[in-house]
Image (cartoon, rainbow, N blue to C red; front, top):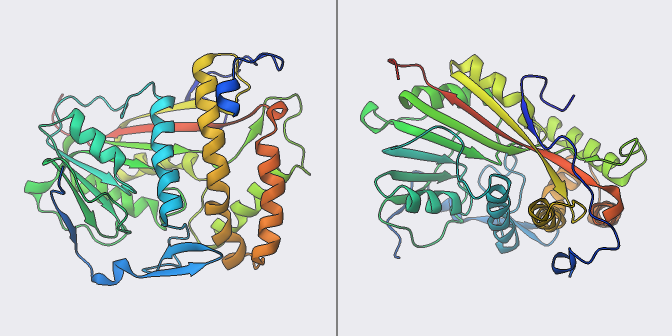
Length: 337
């Protein structure tokens, strides 16, 4: 049984492996801004520097990931990875004509920008605590700098038809409160959609990853560090239950097995795996430094040595590595649809 339980819809439970001698994967081996507003002070532009990376100073103990240009490039690539997982689609929720859309934790804003282009009649708002969005946007898209964990104060006339969340695991202290506020600020029959990768990795090789594997050791310590902060990183499998507890109905879960590396035989999966492998190489330092140095007490040197071993294993094609990507949707109850 795959993570998430028997009610989850799991795509590609077993992936065919590309012949190691094949060279089919050689390519992989080698407008003006509408508005940028803020409801908090100019301190949102204050940064701190640690271990050669830049971090957001505001509530830095809560958001432990960097926000420098290197991290922004990684987030842009991650946007492409999500689109590859879903065959180019931006959403799986059954929406047709949303008028007001909220992108929670918008990051660099690419999803909000693409959604605004796809739905020109919609008003799209991307919200994030750190100001790393582009200085331009189509007329129907704007970015807000604010904290989702504080009280939402949208009047009923400004409630949303669709709320989108992606890659926010590890950033939220109270998921029940977040989803209660999301429900309260959706119009009747409005939809919420969650797109999250599990932060846990597996091997399709018989026996899986051993206990002494660098990846196994690393992910257990990441899990320990994030739980110590009260913001667990590997939490995607729990989010559907929080939606149901908040009052959402018609909650659906799609779980997609996603390869890491160019080992799959299928060309589309091989392309996805290639991008996800690059994504992981970039994400390792961004994800690890804060937890290991701030929470677990490791030095930067100790952390970098550990990362070198982990990265080597992530790049070992023979490991047949994979993880799971989850797409979770829920509807706010309302009149019959």
